[in-house]
Image (cartoon, rainbow, N blue to C red; front, side, top):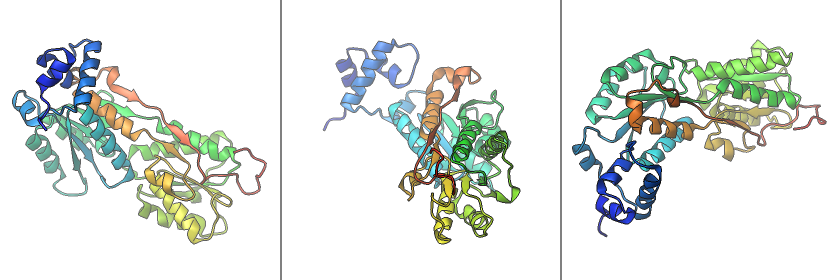
Length: 346
């Protein structure tokens, strides 16, 4: 089949090739109704601009870099998918770059990626988005960047996030409403600011309800399933155990679920378990996990939108480029009434 050209799109849409180019490149000076027609024709004809021809005819590479510390995690998979799909819609390409801050050459790796690939922009995920050395390198490279769930410094760059503190409060109150007073908590990687926000939300909800936080029920993980197996055993391996466990992400909640099965503890009849993120594994586990749906793919897509917006390159401090997306508490089979609280409404 003959490849569809920009002239084919222009002829079908009834506009000039220059107008099609402006729409594809995300330029501002196109009427909304014209933009809609062009985008519809692009989809109908399955038009795919040649990235090399586009980059030769302009100073842009049409490549965006997504920097992750752990690309194999469930969180990273959703972020990658959201960024990839939006890049396709905006006629950009995505380069995924793992960065391990524990390795000696990580600074050189970032610098080489940005300069060697001529990236038009970068998306920084936690904890990279909060590391001052990473921010310094990307800033020195002179490319725009967006941070997902950053700790602070809103003037540094555009940012997309959700209210993790409020989400943790809602999840804890869900457990309290089910009659749970003895609740264990497994914290995430201390390098991630989200770990602190989720833990602070848990403590706030507990103290606001007049319940004490039992320090022996507070455990440290690092967001991986492996890191939560030992803490889960310590929580569940003694007679004085909690009736519920709130893990800071779904991978660690699954570790608690596996440990409960190991000790013969029925979930949710004798123990409720909940997580955070709504990873695919949360839906396929049995029992399926009650969790917080974090809009990971949507946050990544919003980050791409910011980077391809020509206005963003000069006004990253504009309030339009700091977005707070909604979360959702997903109630599934892994949480239920506390033992002895059969009359409590779920």
